[in-house]
Length: 329
Image 1: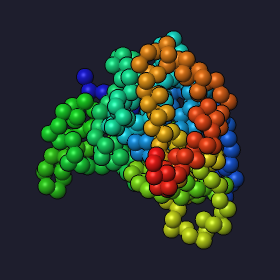
Image 2: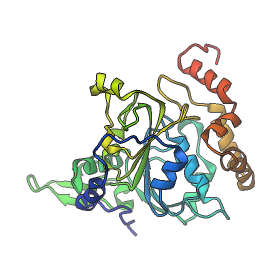
Image 3: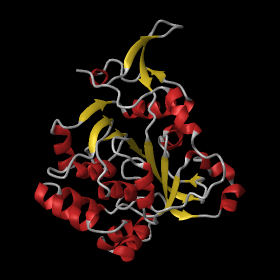
Image 4: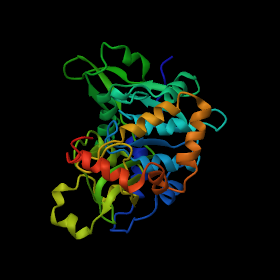
């Protein structure tokens, strides 16, 4: 049976949410706990920015776990450790955080291997899954950012992926050729981690952007976490380097090393040892529950998690590795 759409692609419905966003220069700086408490609701459709372990909003994912959100939809657009974190909310006896997943690349942590627990979650039959290619899932954000209900593509045609998702085959009105109609995706809420933001929500990031330009414009509510806050005058001095403008953003949270244990281009390398610890802990559900209690649920915030993982000395090592100073690392 073909999975249904998990989010309404109607741009007119989304427009009502966008119209409610403030257009003035409002100070949006807050904590991650407050942002999640105010902007992430049970039953919401969630999307995260970044790509693989690059520039992931780890602190927001942890806080969603701590606040025990339930029955979320999720966009799995090459989500590796962030998906692994969210799947921890589907641990037996602790409820169900994820209920619906649009999957392009999930479960795998690239060369590190598969997440045993994320695999258990998706194989359990308790989560609805629709399949997409990486390109078409990103194209759904593009359609939403453009304010159209779908975009045509040749991708998916002739593949089994098309039969496991809700994209439709249509006839081109100009050539008669068969095309895949890829529906717009308007997440209820998204979280994106960036290098710099000002208090109003203007953002800069470096390295691969992938889909974040469009995701920021597609999301009805957007939480930004940043490595550092900068004065708004700095953003004004170089405005062409601001791919996410303030009017897309609902909350700004300063979270140094906020992509850890993922990497941040030009800032710090991924903590491969800690990612391996996660994978090893997941092999046994009881051991994984103890791991979560110690590292995520048993600390007050992301700063507490960093301290558990080695604190400033550890992230300084990862920074040296990223900057090619730690030649022996």
